[in-house]
Length: 198
Ligand code: SF4
Image 1 (cartoon, rainbow, N blue to C red):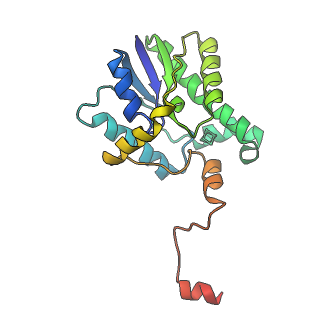
Image 2 (image 1 turned 120 degrees about the vertical axis):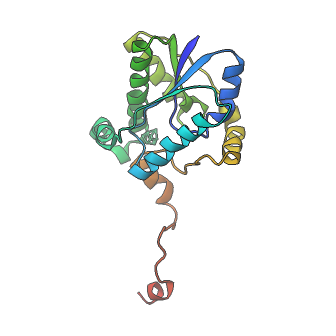
Image 3 (image 1 turned 90 degrees about the horizontal axis):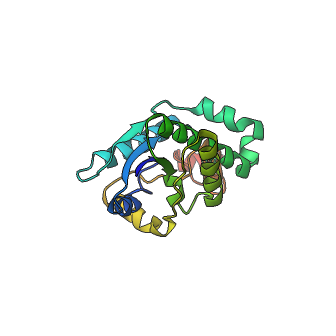
């Protein structure tokens, strides 16, 4: 079977890809992620998938949508209030990405499509599955469901060994806020003596 696999980052795919290739699936990747912000973070994750793809022994080609899609993403989730409704926001985000994947798969002669979002323990697994099934019926191409969450830790350990980029939040500006708002983390610490006086 010729399968188009939606990919949003490199760490989640290392271990599952080995298993999928061993099953004899013919896999090509599809990078389409207007949900990754800001721009330099988008470039880091894109580059990391390219590094993975070009690593010796890495056996599959990837099709890249390299446009930074901030406006596209915001217009998809803004009507829901973005930050205030994470469940609906993520549902729309999954739907946007999997619909594009399904269309690309259909137009380019694949037998089915799937997504590496199903490999992550941090994603809303059931919502991802539903978004895949919905895209499948809208476009008319099978959604290949799989669950490799049990390989998540192993996959990230493999990525670390290969010096692939390990992101610290899901992707959108809202998830970056949710990740860091409860912390006191700053990139710039300033002059700590001056700060104490203020
Ligand atoms: S938290 Fe992640 S899945 Fe949800 S909208 Fe943001 S990028 Fe998309």
